[in-house]
Length: 618
Image (tube, rainbow, N blue to C red; front, side, top):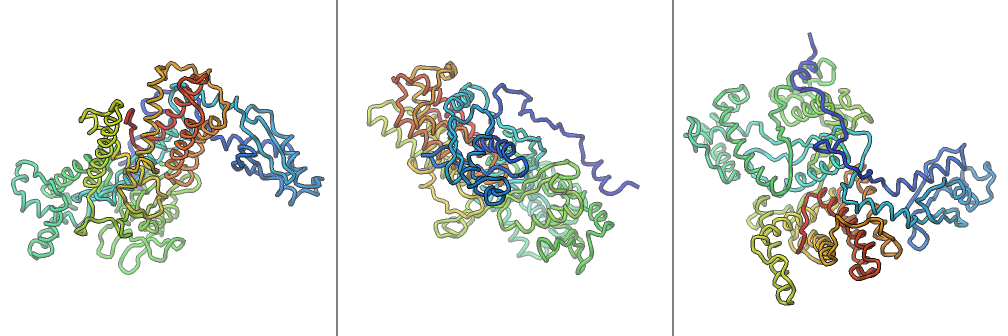
């Protein structure tokens, strides 16, 4: 007499997952978690407002200050005077600002506080406080950030189709999804990386039938067919399906056999999946992507009992021969839990998937990464889950992290000259080849100048080109606002003077070169030597300490380009620091080497989150 939901729960739930904030491996590290500087400043002003005006409930409005006045500015005074000035007995906004200033709690963060006649309260961050924070970044311990409370998060990304090679359209979902997972793990969350591959559907009938024709030996224990070009295999099967009615009829029977669990059909299906999986994994290995394959087929057995339960609850109703769930808050068209012909489609699978993730896995948060063309569909699925009681905001959170398309120079979807979709492997190979050209040119330049060529060994050049080429693709994609389309351009992607991974790699390698030249092992630095005094040092320190502010902002809106912008700005502050503050041979060498190491650590962490490994020399 158990409900369908209970039966599914018993079958698929494998026991409670550990809800801990421990990093992978369960090892704690000593460095205290970084805290957003902006949030710390806002907290101090919030306390001041509650002390000065206990009868008024208002959150502190704190923004970055104009550089010549201060680092942060509280803008509450004018609004408070307008709404409550007379009642509180203040003659003007300036007097309100003075009251906020006087009510600030004692702290080591602010060195100077001023209130303007207009009521703006501006603060400067203490250099001594900055010293303490930056020392922690150079201590050699892992940089940490905690987003409490710990959540169980499922990230649905990449999702290529079985029997088709990954193309440029899979690039964004794969790398954006991987970086989001890394950021969530960095914040202490329990992350489930789910690859919702297209491994089920009517197309498998023609693929199975074609496999039998083209590779008859494999069915009788022969060798696994070496299908090197999945696209060609798919096209050949599709041509047979379109041209031959007898083949088409056999393919349709093969679908029925597969769905009924026929041993031969399942064996052929599994072999097709294996070939695809091998191809996908080669791409994932190069991109540094890790995900658990959980395709459409995983949810097949859940759909019938789930539909029955939704029907019994009156959420799934008959409409034009199909069983539908209506989501009027999102769209007029319904979700089809069961199609008119009695079959199950994408809607059915996505309903079962969100049920499983929220109700069986007990996820607190789910993020789906697909192109923006699917945004309405997923919001319909989210609405249906809310109607069913699986999704209960704000206790649970679901997001569609949509993105624009990759375009060619003509402003249309990126294609080959012959009009074919660009294979992802070809895209990566081309980027690596161009990175090799950049490295070779750099080595030739070093040899011409009589300086030591840092990557003279051809094998080292090959390895460096792979790292640089993949990083260039990842960074060029992720620096774009994800909701925008962008034009793919190899020259801009590998521009050593522009906003590119190449430029960032040079900045990182320059820190390493300074450290080598100093002769001081970074792990042996005495961080107590740090003394921030020059404006360029303070600007670099403030930029370093904004790292957790960026991470926190990403958790809110899922815009990963914020991290790329931050790295670009950090490199700008680092260049100014170099130009204005001599490191090697200066009286402040020890202090500035600490600053260099703190910068390197933050850059290395940001690089890791973005999914690439820097070069120590270039």
